[in-house]
Length: 170
Image (cartoon, rainbow, N blue to C red; front, side, top):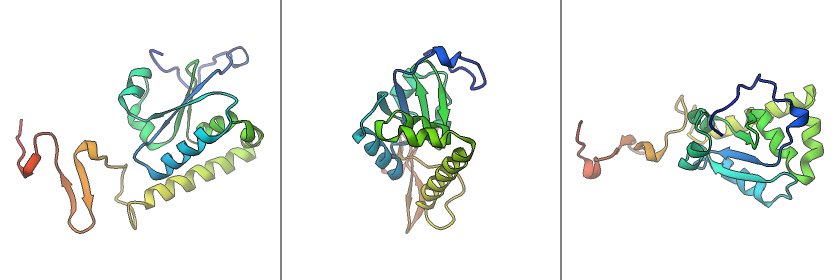
């Protein structure tokens, strides 16, 4: 896939079957890793590939995707370029599973979509709460960015070239 089609573009969905889905998940999130493990244990009607969001593999496979946004909410990419985010991504992932396809159909109705959105918001709230009371007011800091948090001493930065506490400026 060389780019990502806008979500509003008509892809002639009745004639574009889905043969596989790639689920991009936050590998640094305990809840996301739990759901990833659960998905791989399910019987799949449509094969799911689970790839860490914003990883080198994800960037190579989907160069037109906003990879920073894939860390904020689950993103599922269909083999014909379909992009699903948030509640729609959860619904399509359930649709791929043998035992959960009927639930996915119920959640794809207007009333079901409100339930799916509520579940996604609850998961996001739980995820945000993992940073402590009130969170810190933004997205997740990742160790590969050089930032770490110690509850006793707070935030510290150890970026490239900062080993031993001395950083070179460039």
